Image (cartoon, rainbow, N blue to C red; front, side, top):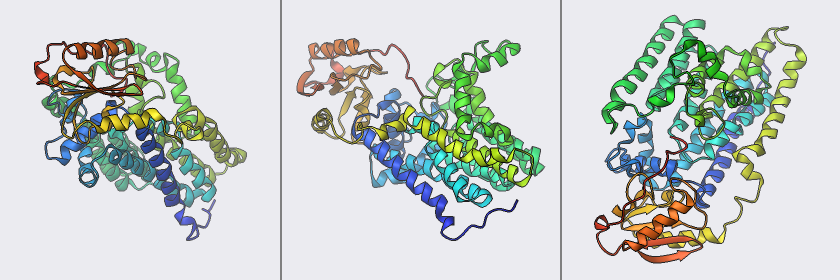
Length: 482
């Protein structure tokens, strides 16, 4: 079946969708930050890393520990590309706006392919379905993460695979090795697809490059820069059998049931049709390490872990529709016609269930008095001061102060200033009761109350804080996401 004719105005659909998504994302993420919904883990961490690049110090992140090099945690030198933007506007909002733009532009290749192959209606369903998907909502609703660079690269690469542009697919995938250490295996998956369906030389070279890059990063570069001398997350990469029983691996992939629910939710916005596309092979590395991990945070729908999968899923959706139109009988005609409206209906049904549901409530549309009070109290802290702050207050200060988290991982006694939210404590890294005990300990050790408004409490030690005698808090656990 011939592709529908595409007029000049219709060709603007991909960029119009991307611009619309950017504006929605920008409002949503910046507004969350203004309302103190962001946190030190992870927005504060990444701002300290980008600020380090911008100041020529490298990605040194005091929130993770004294002199901690972020490249020893995850190999993400792509973050350095944000340094010029940070020179212009040194703020956590710079990271949030950059993330919004990167995630939004990934809609362009998806819409463009769908537009050429199936017309504007399918292009709109595909672009907005991707853009409003729960995987992106969970990512954008939880701060900033390095994988934001991977989302558009994967989108352009997988769409090139679907259009049999083998060299372009490999070139778009190659920079993924600078985003995160595991994504070299995704590059290899792209190469494997090219090797299977197209140019063997390009495919073989891409497979070797991707695997080689991940091995180099995991076995050499990360250990060289890690304080512990090894990759910090090896322990997360074994499933229920601990990797010792290969016969148990299939069971590890589907138990507990939360893993099955996540996979079904990934496919649901495409009416499950994405599962019919061989392009889904590119999703297997990310799905594999997540489902075989012993870390429950990786199994579900929270945080940023599914963001890199959403462009693959929707590219697979377009691939199935394109092939169905080209080959009569591949799918029943009614299935092809019904797929876009079903996809749109599922997207709309899931929208209020996940983080973007906040856009449908009044949560983001007014500023509580406690937020105004927090801004006033935080303005009291001078620039360049060393501050121990509770998790929600950390990213409000990381652009102008030396910030550590109150209770993790360093002692608060090394800070001159302490600022905590006692009215609405986050509960990490300290429980509310433990946080109150530590604030009392700080005051008894010499920290004096400067201001307290709507529970936002600011303390200052008049003497050298390193000489404070009170023991600092130690965190009872680890962050929910890395």
